[in-house]
Length: 583
Figure (cartoon, rainbow, N blue to C red):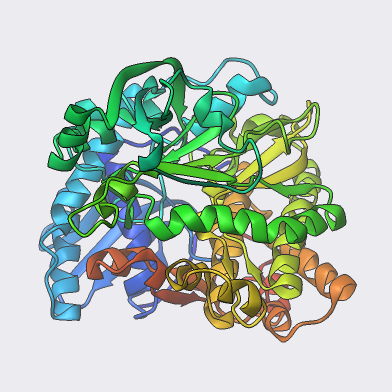
């Protein structure tokens, strides 16, 4: 398929699409990245992207708002398919059916969950768009704790490179009470558990105070909060019902304080601390429960990494990480005397530090995913942080952002054998009163891993079932770092800036290259980093193929994207929005 390209020297900001178009565009993103792009079945012509599904013999087309050097194009309007009479609208449901048929033919296996998961995601997107609260009026950056929570609750569409970003199963109306995009805030269900039936651990004295302050438990009992949706799911478990009848567990009812849902859905915030609950529901690739090894692993990593994280913050004062110093759960013994796994994991809650311990004074934290959102519907969007229309201001802002984000992630991997997972939902961008980034906070130890050859002694001291999931080998760890840092995070933030200032994409990527090169010059040349600077392909997580194969997220496949970092690519693209390939 041949490829020509339109010029697009106007702002590519746009109002939010319909739910149907949003779902269709997300499916196209997955097709382009994982199937049609690698199979050379794409073209850009006359302001449209074309993709062919070769096994189905279907040609698809969508109009473009803006193109991307990485292939992360901006779409507009309905998706159409070639028909005998011309181009005909395909609709999100028929598009999903085309993908279902194409993947069945490609893989030789069926996934009978897929179409319903796409439908569930469509229901979630439609509900989120209907519930979306208008951004606060006025221009300039938001401020204060309300601005932070608004950023967590502003993501109406979710991950744009996942086929089912808003699929949660169950009734959409029921979920609205707990959905961040609906502005959900609600009390926790409080249980009192007899002390001998409490499982838990703390990295330091007082780490469990965030749980104990939620209410009052009788003598000999400890408080255990539960997400109310999860409690409704588990309350009829026979073993729990027996424990309630015997008084081993007391149901204290709703707690007095309201907790707000953050972007991850299951992590809740009361203005002081974050509590990460189990939810036995699939959100994107995973059933979001705290596995036993994750409960223990969070506390183990908090202990183990304290010297490393302290050193990184000293070297890179504009960065820090929220620790997870405690967990608590219910340990009701089964017939063999071992705690019932379903209840242990189902009621497991991890305490994450609040913002006050790490946030610099005078700064406002904002969820990176909200700042980089494709559509400027939330109060934290980068268009509100950059009221100045001069592209040079955007480039200066971008250089400051990269200087905060990139060095600690690379140093963690190369100098400490630590794999951070700095994707857009795991980073808080902390801005000053002028909207300029001054600090980044990393979070979520579940995705943080160790290179086993660098931490052999510490890992050997842990139970094997905790230590094993805590590691990546060096190659897989590097793929995860590069994907989360450059493809998921940097490329998406860069895209939001390029939407504001079309024609600047090559200059923005040149800033990324400069940030990587400066780190190499100042902290040591490394073969993997040199390969990045030479334009080695970038790994991107294959969410469509992972969801189709029903693979654990840890074992997700990666596809390789042509890199925009090579000097010849950047020099060839400088000063123009022309892209010579649809990918």
